[in-house]
Image (tube, rainbow, N blue to C red):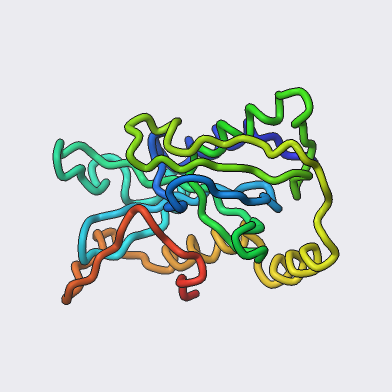
Length: 215
């Protein structure tokens, strides 16, 4: 059954996340990518410096870090929602390589707009054109930090790109990647927050490289 990008809004509610979460670090300025798979939501709870981040398994699945047990905002003391991202395979036009990427949740606004724009409609993934995403990390408006537009030149993947994508996707799909990270959390039955670790270890909310995640 074909998926609809509007379904992402319903997925977000499963994690109690707000729509201001927006923490993937693109290069400042112009970035060009091709999205290859329907995006999968991943939500991550951050607890501050030296404390390991924890992937949210969802409120309905018994995630421990919502409501009274949620991490607190350092400034307001209010419960802090998890950081939400979109996981998908992409082609990075900087080097032409297929990569598993965690992207800002706000990119879905641009994708939804393009799907309803004459000349840029697309029915499935991989998309049949590239995206230009302008990153402005200093912008205070979450919807304006990443401006997503379609590049008006439609062309299929090359044989090499298709083969590279299929090889990576056969090893682990974005959905499997997210589920593996959730399973790792579910294996821990403790109701306690993660313990602070020694040393000068930082768990930044802005940048997570999927290639650095051990399973």
